Length: 101
Image (cartoon, rainbow, N blue to C red):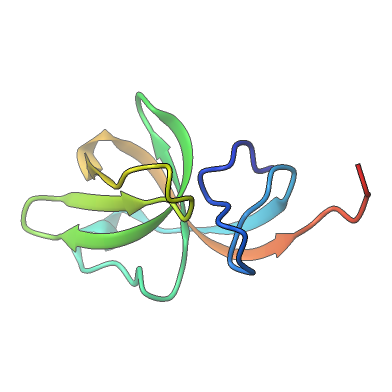
């Protein structure tokens, strides 16, 4: 379940607080090749920062660094090293709650 507003820019691509996302595990042996970040958004389980929902906008394969982007313009892009990532998932589906709270 989505928490926070970093991936909400008001567009149809947004992930809103309370959305349920379905993900597919990206095996760690695939992290050494260029990730298909132009096709998917990601859930990143970072060893210190916790669970992040982000768009990957760059993958430096040689250094093992990915650049993460939030759709909400109030959040800056930042780099993380893949050695600090416990799990990586592609977001493949989103279910939005229909209540009118």
